[in-house]
Length: 385
Image 1 (tube, rainbow, N blue to C red):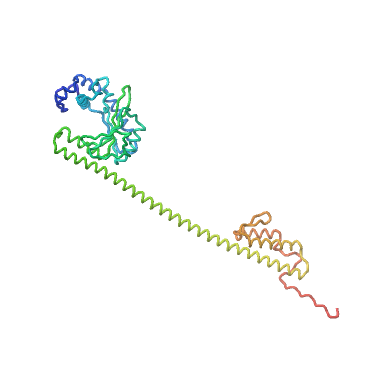
Image 2: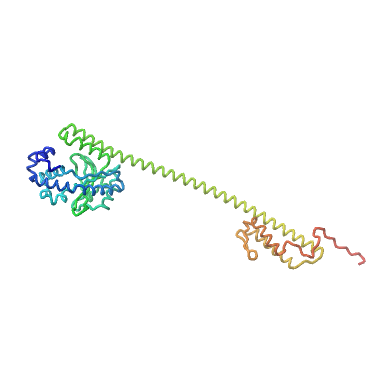
């Protein structure tokens, strides 16, 4: 706790020499007052940080989220170093305004798998969060990095080379969970970059801060992490191409299957029409046979009696005309008040026969008897008649 910490212990634990402390030009009492107030606000800040982390976790492209509130002793160290470096806004810091000057009291870190997912995360942040107006999001790069303009255009991002090689994008979010307006720093980086930075922080601070050999191998590790990010993006693109190709093959197979099914249906339809046509021809033949039988009956009746019903004769003529129309029509004809389709003649043969028989067309006239017996030949006149 800060109230039990002496100035000497604070300077030693945080690697602040006397020259830096003198350059900071701040009273120890001011620092302890800031720290005590910050500790009282801690529980509320933790609640807000956890809530903000849950919101960010929902953004497209976010794999996982970490959060923290700044350690009070590290906050005091930052104040001393900023004042020693003559940072203008820190020169007037006190217990009344520190929470509006220090912008990373709350820290949120959003991690993603592939580099290009930073675009979707950026869109969600700008849509849902209130960013500080005085500065744009900051892209930290390593020396030698080439930042693609389509990812981080300069009109929307500031760019800065990080001396330790960190790569990430930093956003400053304005928030006012209660009366005080506070700020939260939202860092967006890949999982590989997060792994390297965590190891770097654990190894470099404080044990090997000045060990040149450690610095060299951490730099090599940093390059490997960057190459891992590039490899991850390459594998993602390769998988997308493979998926696209597979989708195209699947679509081609589907089209082939649909074409075959359509051809099968067409063949079946043609076979059905052929069968219907043959059935229609059979129906017409049967009707012709009936007409021939009726015509023979009429001739026999005429030979036997010389007379037959004029009404029956008229119906025979009508039947002949109907048969002629059936034989020559493809689109259907009207018989009486009914419409008859010759392509479905076989199906309607019984009903058609019923139609004709209802008018006694197929029945011989009552005057004609014994049509099955052959007619008698007329008598020859004698020579003397």
